[in-house]
Image (cartoon, rainbow, N blue to C red; front, side, top):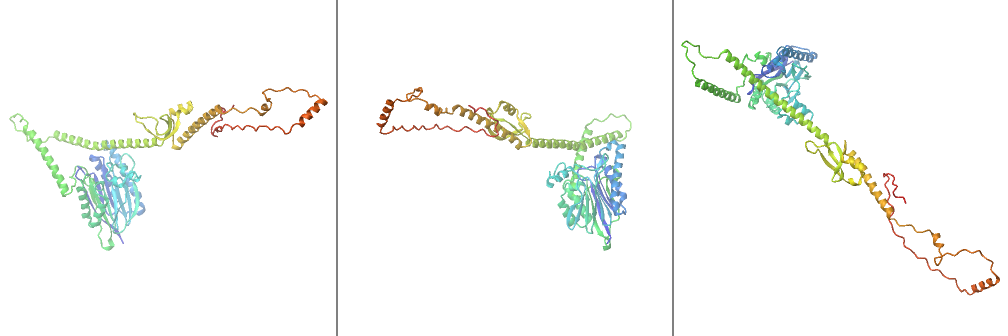
Length: 529
């Protein structure tokens, strides 16, 4: 089995562009497309230089040498663009995208930089085999933008990596394996910006003829508005042993084919949409010519000198003025998109910075006061332009009047910021402990002031006489016989001992126990006495 290519190329200037800044190349071993950037002639130069530098690779190259050869060609194109810019400062900032496939049998070397694309149609499924180097695609890769939103994003054409004169190129290089029946499509963003991948896959699958397929793709882009140059390189992988005939001609289209911006009229599609656009432009030009002729007719005729005069016609000065006016209008047209992109980028940067600043503020907490009580806020304690940047996230029942004056001063000037709510809650817990300790200390003081007086000692009660007086102790004397006899008689007349009255029971006064100071409170000395 011998693998070869059958290919075709089409390029169209589109409906809104004045010139074609795309360049394309198709040969037996090399397929390449470049989309110039920089406006005026600079974009055409950049794309032409890139394709012209790669063209010598359209020959038989060993598989292990294809990627190094592509890398060297990219470096040479980078150097060539730099030399052009040094010679002509007007081309400063020019650049180009580049997507190329280098073939050696069934081995394919892929080189890609920018937002031009390469697709592979295999077994009825279309797959994009390149990765766009754009701002929008980077947002999609980061998960910040959906592919559906990226398709209509206003900055989808903002290229982050390209082949330029000012910086070294950094292309994507990869090796692929081709199979018989594969179909490869290389195209500029003038096609993919207005035609969906689904439509591309359907068209490439339904139209087996290469020329019919590329014509249909360009026609779809024109019908969708054709805002940019449209270039397509389409190739089928075939087996020459099966009797299929490969392509052998070298096809060069776009800026490189004209060998300069003014050598020939750029190619335009011949379809209803393109013809309608051309008719509208022709009508506008005719109206402008009629206005010019009316102004000329109303002007007074110059006085006759009596000599023959040459027929009126444009002079060299008029042509120079017209060229300068065209250049000035072209500069203005190129300047506005740049200014718009810069302004949109600045707005985006400010918006992103504001968003992350707000998110940072929402992750901070501080302790302050509200309605005379301690609360926890989220955000920043400072206001900007009179706008508060904080909200209350937790209220407490801790009044400022119950806290020490030193702590009240700290709270009024806010405590924080803290990196999370837990740290702020720990500060609130400390204040709550202080508040609880102050309450218990006040209760202990009140308990001490109102507790009952203790009862007098028992010995003092027994020492009190029956009539409220005490008798003095006398020295005992020896009783006489008469006294003893009298005492004995007196005792004999007693019939029973005298009984005592039962003691009076006094109910104790009920009084609450002394309040207990929590363990986390400092030692309290006000309960003594």
